[in-house]
Image (tube, rainbow, N blue to C red; front, side):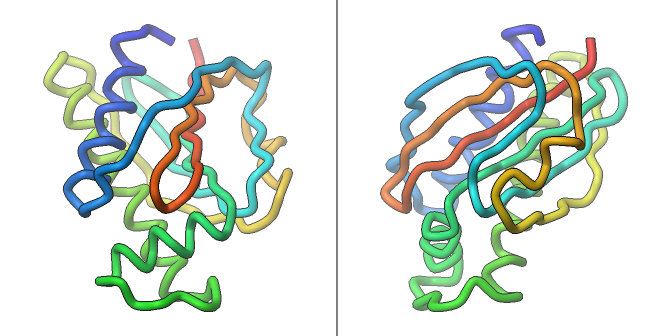
Length: 153
């Protein structure tokens, strides 16, 4: 994947988190995996179609997801990771993807996204994509998370 595209995803995530009042986002790592795989409990997949084809997965421990959902819902305590916080995390991922696609479009790269799909459970998405994946790790006050960008050449 071209580095100029990767920066669109990183900036998209940081912009949306900041817009939602989560200003403590710090990129903590960048790695490659031979295929798409996550080790976290909460994974939200967005498909990419157009000039770039593949998947973006926002992945995090359930505790991070509950903390983010709480922040998105005005500080309301999230005891259970049920329908409301799941919906909030899907919407967050949709917003991040939309922001990233807007940045790509400004560079002349047109990409459409699919609706978000949440998969709850560790090691649940390893068969979705068999392409090389770029893993961008972040740390926030709400907890750690990673963005997995798996695109076809």
